[in-house]
Length: 126
Image (cartoon, rainbow, N blue to C red; front, side, top):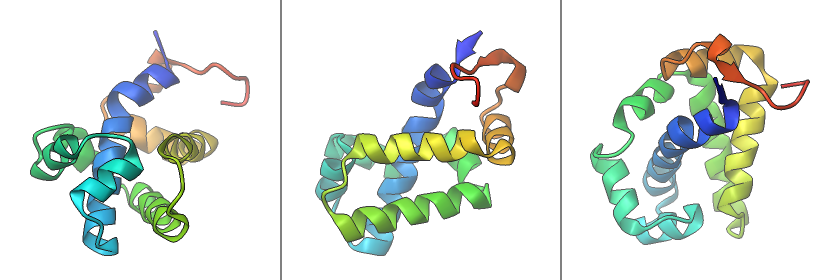
């Protein structure tokens, strides 16, 4: 059994980075370098995400969930507006949003092919 944090970091976080990079570049005119700096990763990673060479299967699965698309749009807008938002805060916020809504959580876990019963949640309210 894995903790949700392990599942999140290994499966969801790379896809989130890819979705945020696409959103920042396509809708907020950020360059790959600017998006990389905001997200705390390299420009090469951004390029891999955009070309579908990294996390593409899970990215596509999450992209098909309207709630995830809405959260990504909201976070990208927040980043574009506040400019100084730290990447770790954005990633934690996404995680908290997903875990706080049972429907979102079920849809995300299903999209990445993980059974809810195989995930251990560290806090009682998770």
